[in-house]
Length: 265
Image (cartoon, rainbow, N blue to C red; front, top):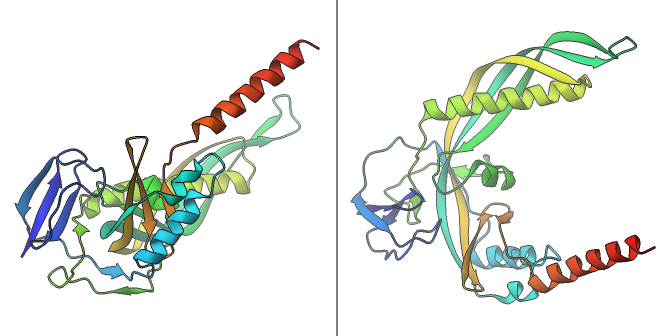
C-alpha cells in the first residue's frame, strides 16, 4: 500500500510506501504534512535509470562544497542527509517555425535598416511537473539520459516519487513559449539583430512524461537549513550555499581601503 504525503508549505505531493516513516518534506523541510491515499494518475512513459548511488552522490556534494572560494571550509565536512526520489518532468520535441522582423546596423541616417524572414528549427525542451523542483534547477541539472531508462510501474517501485502537478496541456503551453523564446534568441544572434519581433508556431513531434531520479540533500549551517539537488544520472549538483562571513568582510575591507587610497592620491 502507498500513501500520498502532501506538504502544506511548498505543495509537493510525494508517494511513499506505507512502511516508511516521513518526518518532514524532502523539498523544503516543513513538518506540516497531510497524508492521503494514492489516487490513479497518468502513467509516466518511463523512469530514467539511477547511475549515482549514495556514496557517489555524497562525493559529488563534497566536490561542489569546494567549488567556490566564497563557501566556508567547514561546509566540506558537514554531515549531510541524502534521500533519493523520482520527480516528474515533461519532455517535448517539436518543429518551431518563426516569422520575424528586426533591425540591423546600416549606413543610413538612423544607422539601422529593417530586415525580416522566416526560420525553422527542431527543438527539445523539458519542464518540471514538480512542485519541489524549479525550471531553473531542472535546466541546471541537465543533461538527462533518456536512452538509459526503464518502464515505470508505481506498484513495484520502492523509492519515493512525486506525483505530477502539471498536466500535458499546461506543459505544452509553457514549453511552446520557451521554444519560441529560444528560437527568437537564436535568430537574433544569427542575424546580429539590434531588436527583433517574432511569432512562432510549434508542431509537436514527441511528448513524454519522465520520472527523473534525484538525490535531495540537506544540511544545517549557523542554525539555518540549506537544500541541494543532485542529478542521480550525472552527479551534477544544484543548490544554494552560505558564504564565509570572514571572506566577505575581508573583501569588503580591501575594497574600502583601496577606494580610500585612490581618493587620497
